Image 1 (cartoon, rainbow, N blue to C red):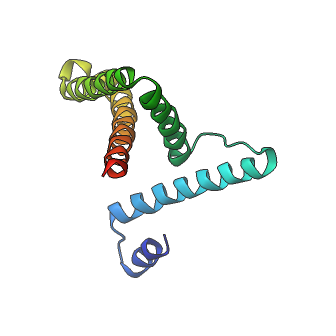
Image 2: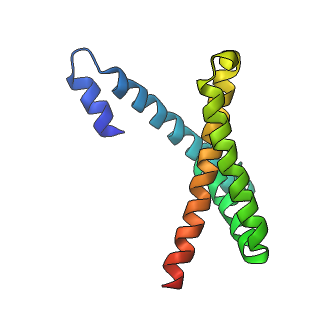
Image 3: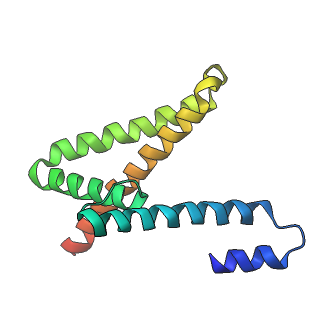
Length: 128
């Protein structure tokens, strides 16, 4: 964040991508502080920060993989199909009204695919 701030300060007209990156970093940082503050006060996370969301999802999916591997693979398959579906929706001009919602849902499912892939790669690393 400091590097971005310095880069913005040094450039006469700051680059738009730097400003966007700084804003996104600030938002993530504020969410992290909010999560930590709530954890210190109540002993529980709010579940709003992406790392916390994925951590919970990771543990749930890991438990599913261990208890019922076929259900785990079924969930993976459904999630992959959702990613393809929402990519198609975003490209479809008939669904331009719902584009923002479809992009949000695509990001959600792509994040979930990343969690699935992390679980599978961790399993492969442990089996070697």
